[in-house]
Image (cartoon, rainbow, N blue to C red; front, side, top):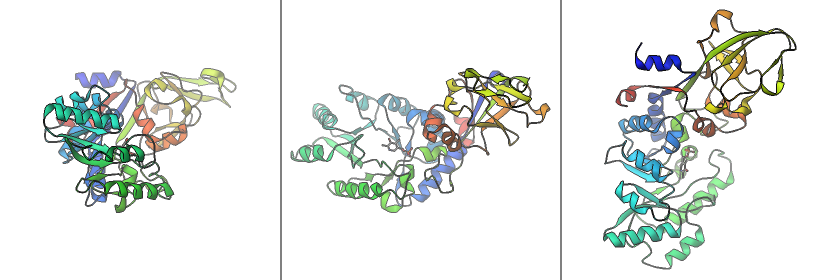
Length: 376
Ligand SMILES: *Cc1c(COP(=O)(O)O)cnc(C)c1O
């Protein structure tokens, strides 16, 4: 057995990331975006899938613009993509750390007057223009210059001196609901702001924004979740390919009698004789406790419901409906598969697919499939 096979055999759960699916999703988004350039958002370790592997796959797919949230993520990503690709840091630099953006060749997103001032001062000190993105707030009140900030800054005609504006961006609050009137409001506000920066490319659309139509595309698309298969338009058929699957191993089997209880809190009482399988995954691996009594695993496409409370390291399943020879210690059951997507699990837990993906645990054995996997 090779080292890798041995690690897989020991692992309680195996996460498989299909990099060809990520690449196909990127192509689909780029195609939908038509005239706009398609960037990729790789924050939070590429939504839990693995920044290094996803970056390599998207570089091969021709992606040239990458966004992360934190400066530290940018520093890491910089070492993973060729020098001619751009890495944008959406939070910009914390006070006193702007120099790191220069050192690591990162383009900061400037979100408030303080970040603008610091970037300008650094440009003056270095005696050369420094590239940056300007984020404006169009109503989400989270990141970016508020309208009043922008108006005040613009009173100084030299406010952008030394700043080479690469992009003006904003972020949509409700894009996953195409019928939400706030989308159009934000789009109009963004249009107004963008007109103040003639010749500077503009970016508004996240994944869901790409599907709101070309009026939302502007020059650069910033999809994240859709690259990873999360549904950008709940209520419609998902055009994207699932990029992750997850299987967990059976640790132990037992038969319980009517009236026996299973798991913490004695929340499950067997209504009759039941076969219970304990699998090696729990909330410490991101399989949320909120899934207790609400989710299921699949064995050859047949559902085995969760029985009892999800534990830290294990989950108990009712496998009475599964052929006995199919569930033995060491065998795997599927948690993310054709029958159950990330969005399905999120719905069962009362959350969104983003949270399920970004909670995916560090104890999994990870396998990467697809053409880009060899490069990593
Ligand atoms: C996370 C993020 C994105 C990507 O959003 P998705 O909904 O995952 O496509 C784009 N822009 C900003 C500012 C973000 O924070």
